[in-house]
Length: 490
Image (cartoon, rainbow, N blue to C red; front, top):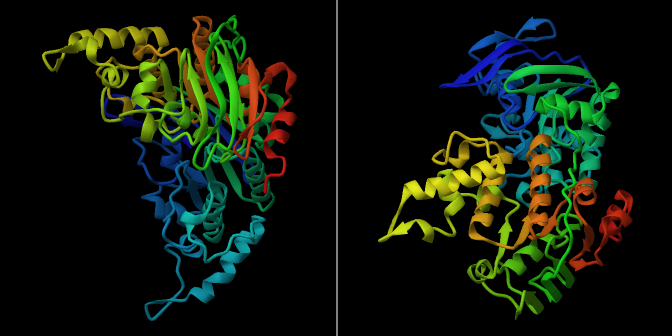
């Protein structure tokens, strides 16, 4: 790809991007949210038409008129949000658009061997072609997407954040699949915010920043810190900045609480000025625990104490009144009103300071939102900009700003850095430290073990609904966290 440009109105998303990928290699494409990675890959896959630039595949000119045209040239795109038909079977999804027919009748038996062969190659012969996709887990759905690319004889596969929603075990299996594709001679462009994965699976890398190519090189010769600095355009002193803070009085305590059906049992004490992390596999009950604390899910037994208030479960409204706030793991579906402005999102749960005779005083609301925008370093055009136009990291900051505007003292953060780039993660880590230094109590659920150990003061691991004892982060290793989370797991 040479000199690729793409403009959306006044926004220049791609400004003369160059990308060269060798046959049969795994090439990592990295950069912050909004750097242009997804737009560039949409150009490659035919989903977006470039305004300028040229492309070649195997030395021959390439200008896809659409995704079908790109697939005919051997280019397959696997998006972060998978494009599967959940009510169709695995086989129907894999062969969609390539069905074997005779006299208008689909010949299912004739297609079965190709689907089974692809699944065997991907080491997932356990996935039955007759299973409906909606009954599969996230990792198996990824395999179905890859199998569809293989059946279509793809020679260049683009994977956009393929492990962002996977457990550590499933992520390991997917990385093994990527290596297997390389051994088969398939070229892979791998987009990821997890640079540890990039170091393990990629041969070379290209960095995009602000819609431009700023660096390329061999992964083996580049340090993670150097790649981060190329991505953000500045020196990064440390990935997990340490803001001094000290634990104080107990702000939240749980006494053997259980939910329906999860968690089964959870006991802990969270103190003001402390960051406490909870690790574990997806499905272990971590999210259910936070939702039960916040009142979004019922508490079947046990007690929750917030300050001097003791109860067995209450409503989110009451919890907010007690100073407890939840940051959902799914910011697009639950955490934000994407069609509304930044100011509306920040003040949504506490509009009273700006209410006059049933109307919102927009001037005062925007002034308050602007203060939070400045304090949290939210990159935007102003408080009136729709949240949907922000990058993932800045959307996350808006969600945090709403909790702070409401005045909460206990923050329940569920996967706070999922889907955001390395530079934004560093900013979120620094913000968490600053909040702890200000006396806030922070409970974090994360599937990213280095994050738990690098950010948190103490760490507890949840296994099959049971929360283990919280220990100082320095007493854990990554291996111990993973082992504790997966012991006896199927």
